[in-house]
Structure formats: C-alpha cells, structure tokens
Image 1 (tube, one colour):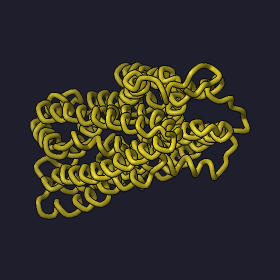
Image 2 (image 1 turned 180 degrees about the horizontal axis):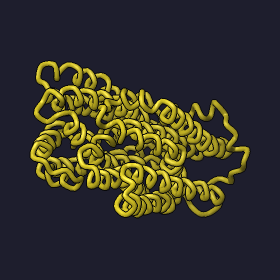
Image 3 (image 1 turned 135 degrees about the horizontal axis):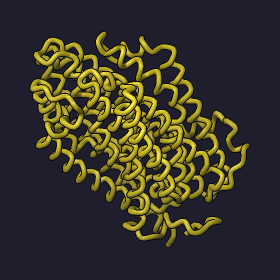
Amino acid sequence: MNKTKDGVRDLEAASLPVLLMKYCIPSLASSLVTSIYNIVDQLFIGIKLGINGNAATNVIFPVITLITALSLMCGVGASANMNVALGQGKEEEAKKVVGNAFSLMILCGAILSIVVLFFSVPVLNLLGCTNILLPYALSYARIIAVGFVFSLIGAAGPFLIRADGSPMYALASIATGAILNIILDALFVLVFHLGIQGAAWATVISQAVSAYMVLFYLKKYKTLKLSLVDFRPIPAVMGGISLLGAGPAFNFMTQAVSFVFLNNVLKIYGAMSVYGSEITLAVSGVANKVNTFASAIVTGLTNGMQPIISYNFGRKNYKRVIETGKSVIGTVLVAGFLIFLCYQFLPVQIVSLFGERSELYFEFAKKYFRIYLMFIALNGLQSSVAGFFSAQKKPAKSIIIALTRQVIFLIPLLMILPKFFGLNGVLYAGPVADLAMAFVSFTLLYKEMKKLNEMNIKTKNIEM
C-alpha cells in the first residue's frame, strides 16, 4: 500500500467491492445531485411558464452540456494525471497538476462567459431558438453566463477532492449547492414571481456556494501540500490535463453539437407537423433534462472507478484495472436497462411533472421517449468505456467512441432521415446512432481487456 501523510491509500490493496462502494457511491450521489440543478430549474419553469419555458431552457441546453464537457476535461484530466503521477511517486508533478487544473477551470469559464454575454442573440439563433422563445431564452442565458466560472469549479473541483481521498466532502460541496438551488428556485419563482430569471439567479448563487466550498478545501488538501506557486499557469501542464480529459470532454462536446442539430431539425420539421416547433422543442428539453439523471448514474459510476484504475495502471497492477472496469461497466448496463423500462412504460408520467398537459404534448412525448431513447440501455457504454480508456491515459479511443455516435452517425442521420420521413426521421436517428456506438465500444473494450490480460501475465513473469 501507498502511505500518505494522513493515513493509508487503499487503491491498490483494499477489497475491490469495498473500494468501489467507497468511491462510486459518493461519486454517483454527487452526479445525481448535480443533475438536480437542471431538473429543478426545468420543473419550476415548466410549472410557471409551460411549453415556452420548457422549450427556452432546451435551447440553452447545448451550452450547459458544453459546461459539463469542460468540467470533465478539467476534473477527469487532472485527477487521472494526479493519480498516475502519485502511483509513479512523482509528488511535485502531482502538485502542479492540481494547481493548474484550477487555473484551467477559471480560464475556460471566463472565455465561455464572455462569448455568451456579448454574443447572446447570435448564439441563441444558432442553437435553434424561435422568435417566440427568444425573450425567455435571452434572459436565462445572460444570467447563467455570469456563473460559468463558479459552475466549472463546483463541478470539476470535486474530482480532485475525491482523488485526495475525501469523496464525502466532494459530495457535500455539490449537495449543498443543489439543496440551496431548490430553496432559491421555490423562493424566486413561486414566491417572488421572478419567472425564468429567478430560476437562473437561483442556479448562479447555488453554484457560487459550491465553488466556495471546493476552494476552501484546498487549504487542507491531504495527499499533497499545495502552495501558491503550484497554481501558476504552465501551458504544458494545462495541455496535459486537457489531453487526458479530452475523451470524456469530447463525448459531451460532440453531444452539445448534436443537440444544436437536434434543436434545429425539431424546429424545422416540428413546424411542418401537427405538433409545432414549440411542442417538439419543449418535449425534447424535458427529455434531455430527465436524461441528465440517467447520464448522472453513468457518469457517477465512471468517475468513481477513475482513481482506482489510474492509480493501479500507474502501479502496473493490470489485474485490478480489468476487474474494476468489468464491475463498473456491467453495473452501468444493468442501470441502463432499468432506465429503459421507465422510458418505455412511464413517458407520460415523467413529462407530467414538468407542467404542460395538452394532448399533443403527451402524444409527442410518448413517441420521443419510446423511439429516440429506445436504446438508452446501451447509451451508457459511451461514457463508461470512454472513461475506462481515459483513466489509463488513452484519450484517443475515448474520442473515437464519441465521434462514432455524435459526429459520424447521429448528425448525418439528423440531416438525411427527416428529408424522407419527416419528424419520424428525427426520432429514429437516435437509436441507429446508439447501436453503432455500442458496436464500436464493445469492440474496443474487448481488445483492450485482451491487451491488459497479456500485460498482466507479462508483469507476473518478470516478477517471478
């Protein structure tokens, strides 16, 4: 075992089921709590503003997805680099990784804030906003843009806190913000009647509190003794973080791009259908927000396995890497099947939570959940298998998986199928892309497991 100043690091020798529970459960809880931010806003906005409110927040959703991508780039990239460096005994290198990760979070958040604040209308038009939705979306976008730096620190920082052996504090920092968001949403939207602007301010304030808790933790970092010089930006270190976090980040970045295409084709072909643009965008918005809960399960389990795989890969303990990957990816598939059952049998009950209750709204909601999200059980492979590769400092394969679904298949399908099948073509593009991604993921995973087994045998022979 690897001793630290404050105790024992059990990543290499502790019981794997116990270790997975220690890291995956808090990480899973953190991801689920994070998803509450978007879902709670959608609930209150939907109840108060109905279709237009739900559709407006859906227009902004690609930007929220991009924030998630950047937080994964900073968080996964930094924690993986840190754990591999510690596994190799390179403490000074690990310290610079932690410090530069926070510099990168601030830089990314600031750039995105400036773009959204100063180019709000062009950005919203690009994202598929209609003239009816523009006033709602504009108010929401400009307010949440103020808090993008807080959002990144609050979402990416817990990765480094978990890597430091404090998963419960990481969970507490996220949970505090989420609980505060619920309280402020109710206060601003229902009591003070501030509408979509109130929901946006509730999010910004809550994220600022989470970010403060993350920054406060740095004073008592256990694994490494951090100093101000470690936070001095070093392009090479930030580049290394970005490269290693590129796999999971690219997954969400390409999702953001695909959401832009999806919004635009729903706007066009929805207008040609009996449903209209606003209903199709609203249903997609609710489904996307609900699906953040499903994605949070996958992301949480994947993030929980990351420190275990990274550390043991650095120590050349390949058997433990294999066992960890199999356990978590298997759990992801089981969770995905349960989510599939909910989407197939309870679509009306799910969308009913978000306000609008028109017959056409429910009719399209059933089609969207049952067709577009048909293979949600396989969708979790994209994040979990990609995370398995990223934890071993192999981002290229993670990027290939993301490219397969979003870029190579989904976007072209969204451009081609609707021309022949109208709105139904939009819906069937999703499951076809999911099947293609699953095939690529299984193929790459099988080859990687085979390679790790060979490396494990080779390592044992050398030791003997």
